[in-house]
Each structure stands twice: as C-alpha cells, then as structure tokens.
Amino acid sequence: MDVTPFIVLSAILFTIGCVGVLTRRNAIVVFMCVELMLNASNLALVTFSRANGNLEGQIAAFFVMVVAAAEVVVGLAIIMTIFRTRRSASVDDASLLKY
Amino acid sequence: MKFTAPHIEYDLVAPILIVLGVAVLGVLIEAAVPRVHRYLVQTVLAAVGIVAAIVAAVLVLNRIHPRAENPKPGFLSAEGALAIDGPTLYAWLLILGLALLGVLLFAERRLEGGVTAFAGQAAALPGTEAEREASAKGLEHTEVFPLLMFAVAGMLMFPAANDLLTLFVALEVLSLPLYLLCGLARRRRLLSQEAALKYFMLGAFSSGFFVYGIALVYGYAGSMRFERIADAVAAGAGSHALLLGGMGLVAVGLLFKVGAAPFHTWTPDVYQGAPTPVTAFMAAATKVAAFGALLRLFYVAFGADRWDWRPMFWVVAILTMVVGSVLALSQTDVKRLLAYSSIAHAGFLLTGFLGARSLGDIHAGDINPVQAVLFYVTTYGLTTMAAFALVTVVRDAGGEATHLSRWAGLGKESPLVAGSFAFLLLGMAGIPLTSGFTGKWAVFASALSANAWPVVIVAVLMSAVAAYFYVRIIVVMFFADPVGDGPTVAVPSIMTSAVIAVGVAATLVLGVFPGPLLDMLGRTAEFIR
Image (cartoon, rainbow over all chains, first blue to last red):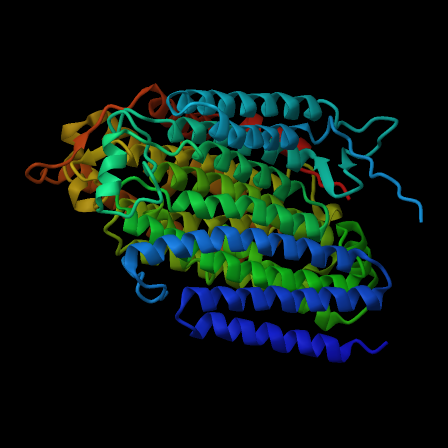
C-alpha cells in the first residue's frame, strides 16, 4: 500500500491546525485547531500502523483521543472561567502579563 | 484469538501507584468528608502518601544492583513500558522530595490569615459579592492536593517512560493538573486565570507537535519502544527525513516543558501569574521530570544519531542561556525575574545534556552527562523552591509584594529573610561554596569533554550576566533605603519555614560537600534499554 497520500493529507491537516492556532483570536477556535493537529497526528499514526504491519499506532491513536478528551475538559473549564470574568474569549484580550 | 493479560511488577511501580491511589482517594474525600475536616485530612493524606512512595522507591533502589538473575542495572517493568533504573529512581526520589516540600507550601495557612493561598471558590467571579461571601466564610479549595498528586504521578512516569506512548500519556498527566492549579490563586485572580489560559493554550499547542513527532518516529522505526527505535536508528533503516522530522517535533514538546528558548515565552507569564506555591513546585519538579525524559529519549532511543541532533541542541542551549540572562536584566517583578532565571538555568542544564558521547569515550573519573544534569537539577530544584517560598512571606495589604522596588531596604526590616534570599541568589549565580557553583562546574565539565566548548564559553559569559542581576537584587535589599510603608515580612508557619530551611541547607551542603552525591550519581547514572 502506498502511504504517501495519507501522510500528505495528515501533514496538510496538521499545517491548517498549526496556522489556525497562530492566527485565530477566539480561544475556542484556537483550541479546535489544536484538536485538528491531534487528529492529523492520529491519521498519521493509523497510516504508519498499516504500513508497519503492527497495531501500536492504532492503540496510540486511541490514547491520543482519550487524552484529547481530558484536555477538552480542562481547557473548556479554563476558557469558561476567563470568559465569565472578562466577557470575552479572545486570546488577545488577556494581556495583563507581559514583558 | 487468545488474550494474554499483561504482566505488571506491582512492587517495582509501587511509588507511582501509591501516588495515584492517594490522588483518587483525595477526590473521594472531597465528596465524602465534611468541609471543616477536609483541609486536615487532605494535607495528612498527601504527605503520608508521598512518604510511603519514597519508602517504596528506596526499597526498589536496593534491588537494582546487577545480579545473577538480572545482569542489567535495573528492570524493564509493565511489559517494557517503564524502565526502572538508576536515573529513574534518582528522579523519583528527587521529585517526591520536592513534592513533599510542595505539599508543605500548599498547606500554608498562616500567611493568608487562616486560609490557603488558593481561591476560596474558583467559580465565583473576581470582585463580586459571591467572591466576598466565599472569603468571608473562609472557604478554600482543598482539591489542590489531589491535583498536586496527579501531577506528581505524571512526573514519576515521565522520566521512567520507555516507549513514546507512555511518554505522551505521562506528559499530559503531569500537565493537565498544573494548568488548573495555575488558575486558582486567591489574590490577583485575573493574572492567575490569564496564566492558566496561556499555559494551557501553549501547552496544548506544543503537545500537538509532540504527538505528530511521535507519529513520524513510529513511521520511521516501526515501533514505539525506545530499544527498537535505537536499533532502527543504529541500523540506519528507513527514511532519514522521517527520523529528523520526528526528532525535531518531539524535541519541541519536551523543550517546551523544560522552558528552553524559543519555546520559553509561557514561562515568565505563568510563573508570575500562578499562585506562588504552585510556581515553586512547578519550577522545580517539572524541570526534573522533563530533563529525566529528555535524557532517556535522546540518549537511549536517538543516541546513535547524536551527530544529527547535537547541532540543534547547541543552538537551543546557547539561545536559552542568552534569552534567559539578558531579558532578566530588565525585570522589575521578583517572580518574573526568577522565571527568567529559570530559563537561563534550563540553558545551563542543556549545556550538560550536550556532553552526550559513547560509553567507550567516558573515562573513569570523568563527569558523565547524566550525572552532571541530575546533580544540577537537584541543586536548582531545591534552591528555586526555597526562593519562591521566601517570595510568599514578603507581603503588604494586597498579598505578596512582588515588585522589586518594594523589596528595597528589606535587609533592615528582616535580616533573616533578606539574608536567606541573598544566599539563595548567590547559589543561583554560582558563587563558590554554594551548590550552584558545583552544579555549573559539573555541567561545564560534561560539555567540555564532548568538545562543546563554544557553548561553554557562552555559558560562562552568561553566568557573569546572570550574576549581575542576582547581585542587583541583593544591592536593592541591603543598600537601598526602604520606601515609606514598605512591605512587612509575615511570619509563616513551621511549614513554609521548613521549606526555606531545607532549601538553604541544601544550597550550602551541596556546595561544601558535593562529593558524596556526585559519586552516588556517578555510580547510578546508567540507563538500561
């Protein structure tokens, strides 16, 4: 099986996520872009798992999903708190700490 | 298909299991025990749990010497997912020791007048009636103790992880509780919440890179296990581009945790905004865990390819030392200044890390890089912990007085506090007869024996720059006139005092008699695979 198309697709998804994190302002959207990066990694893991002929990559993909779910819990809690305090979820507004 | 249950050596991994068990028990206590008793129960449980884990780790330590039935200096445990060897056990004992000091700082109540330094009710908005009501009732979040224990469990797994997946899970288990702890300060809650947001966003971003790096390395080596990756790297099989990309991306994730430039930008903000007990614990223990993991991953798994990764770490080490030392010069906030100083220390630790060379090139009596890094991180951890503990006792009406101008004339107000802080700063600067000097000597010797002399020259220059800003604080404390209504030095309970005393004593003892610890590390600093 030629894995190149799948890896290229995962690289494209990873790049979209990465650019999104760097350019978007809303904390929720930034966070969704991080999830896109993790899912791009999952695609790469599963593809390599197929190419290598063992299951380690697929198992890792499950762990990444579980960890991503845990990260959502913590992340949304933090974003919620900051939104309730500041009435804004923009990552540019939280700028008391600098220099 | 027949399912075979994995074989877990419960006695070997007992320290991790004890800490995790205590964390889960702590969550149950939040549900079952009445509010008035929770503080006492949680504190005692956390402290007892850590002591039990230390005892378990010492019992394992006595078993890892090579012997007939196990010729290697350690064990692969849990189906090879965890490597229990000398460096792991040393990191465990150090992390558990720092965690015990962390529990003492978390439990400090006298400084805030009968409550802990954590938010009374994190859900109550800052500056509202609900918040005032929560503080009037004397509420406090005792959930911080279970969160701390979860973070400690992740930190114990991190340097022991022997495959990439365990490494990733450990990274997240140690990070997620820390993100929450950062946002739970009682005072200056906007800063604290902002710190949590920044730490979380950047941490999640860096773990995205880390996972993609894992995928690429897996694609290259066909396995997550460090020993199989090492075999693949030594054989030079597969696409070299995958390996280089994978190593780079995995390094991003680890260097972020270490706080090395150019992935350091979160460090000052988070160290300043987080509650000071959390900063103290995080600054010390995360570095131990992250450097343990960095050493194992790059020495065991990628060791055969060090000609490829060494230039990258040269650049990162130099950049980290320069950024940390130079930016610290213009800081006016004590916590922020200590954060930049911790970035500079990460650079010095990376200098020691560059001493990587093949085992045949290490002569008897040489400082080997693992020994140097573990020694430096010990001195750094204990000194930093005590320094942040001292920050918590200099207070005014608004809480901790962290602005440097408020520290003017502290030497007249309280010679003991100012003197201890000055001594710790001299330790960080690396003045002889303090632990910092021995640590710096060890990492420089390690780097020199691997011919990384340009990095050592930069390191020596940056030590001089760093000494300038440390001495500047000492001058402010002792030779500047106190400002009117300056901060008062609060008398802490025995717990914070104990942390400060341990840190100061360690800085002195490891500076005057570093021999025993260095020798012990020299004997145990060998990774198994």
